[in-house]
Image (cartoon, rainbow, N blue to C red; front, side, top):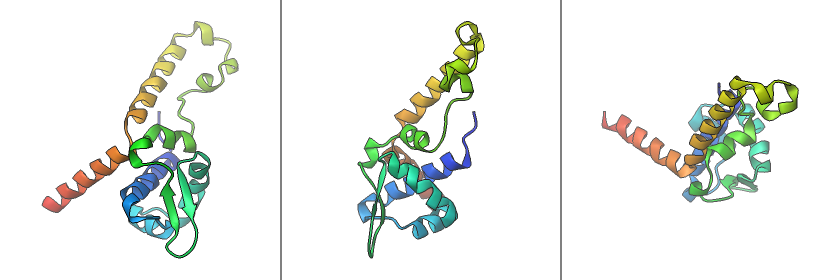
Length: 143
């Protein structure tokens, strides 16, 4: 299973919003600069994150994007599911695509892989990621 740029950058964008949660809305321009992601690409990630109910926009001077819920209430699974398909094979999403699903050992393995991936992503919140980022940045400053 390989995470696309869309999922990776979306997670970074959400981490940026969460890291600045207490400071108020985050502008796309500032996020693009901090995360080294093009503004144009970020603009493509925002609509599905909004549609998933993870972020909202605030208009006007000092506006930008903020989380709809507290960082500890949003997990990586929600973010990734808003941006991309996680299934390693088509038959997990659409069992009818393959007549062998009911008698296929590999289907069972792919299903376990997806469940394990989902469990890991669901167990990590944005608050956890903010803390991980803080520790990494402290380690860099300490060197």
